[in-house]
Amino acid sequence: NLFQKVLFFLIFLLGNSSDFKIINSPNIRLILQTLVVIFFISSSNLNLENTKIVFLDFLLRNLYFNLIFCSFCIIILVNGSNFIDGLNGLVSGYYIIVLFTLSKIGLTYEIVNENFLHLLIFVLTLTFILNLFNRIYLGDSGSYLIGFFIGTLLISVYSKNSYLSPFYIILLIWYPCFENLFSIIRKIYLKKSPTLADNNHFHQLNFFYIKKKSFLKKFNPNNVSSLIIIIFNLITFIIGSNDPNNTKLQITLVSFNIILYLIIYSKLLKFRYKY
Image 1: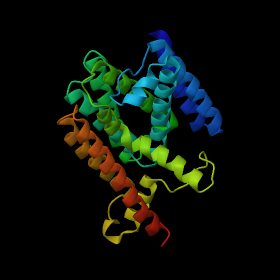
Image 2 (image 1 turned 90 degrees about the horizontal axis):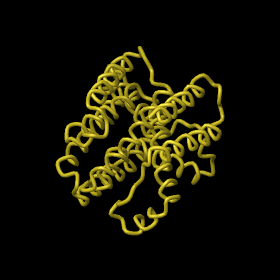
Image 3 (image 1 turned 45 degrees about the horizontal axis):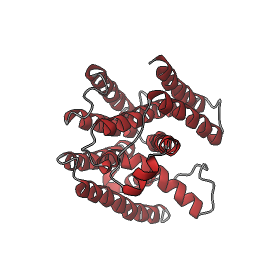
Image 4 (image 1 turned 90 degrees about the vertical axis):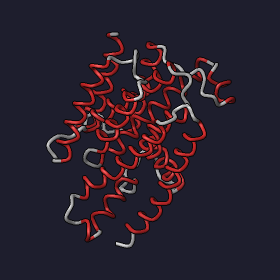
């Protein structure tokens, strides 16, 4: 409806205010994001009823907890999308494979117009290609908007397809969400502000490693870094999509991805501080 479209536009404007240094405080942006997300969820009746996790399902019976939990998930994804926007094509490329995967196995049927979905994939593909050649950038406005759309779409997908494993949905968004959560935990552990910017995110360390390796210098390290992350996730999406209602498979894939992330992250961090 019109009100929801206005809220999407507000998320875009909020990202735009960051791009143009109008709202510089990340805390203020987070508060405004939270308000927009809460209004959207309330107005669209988005909710999670059955996650197949007993204690969580019990808590989700409470409407206020349900609202807070759904809002938290979307906000983590929105900011995680912004986190990984440091490499050319990473955000657009990642969400192309998410949308393509959902469309391929028919999970978006009756939730979003197929023509709109195909148009969105086309626009993201065009953006991805142009971004690789430094011709166009998503910026905070673009990453906020696509993260917000994907978050609300996935909640709707899961609500309409109760046979799905909730960990399949987690698999589709694990990377941007985990980048964000891991960064927050890491900074708190180091007694730094979670909103303090640094260059020790996984995708940045990956870029630094490729840039320093002589046998990769003939390639664009920015683009190569993005493609490695996108291709890896595409492979796990393909495996997970073969049986999206198999919780054991989805937990295995998510766990494997997180463990591999942590192992590679520690090695990349050590490599960075050698040079």
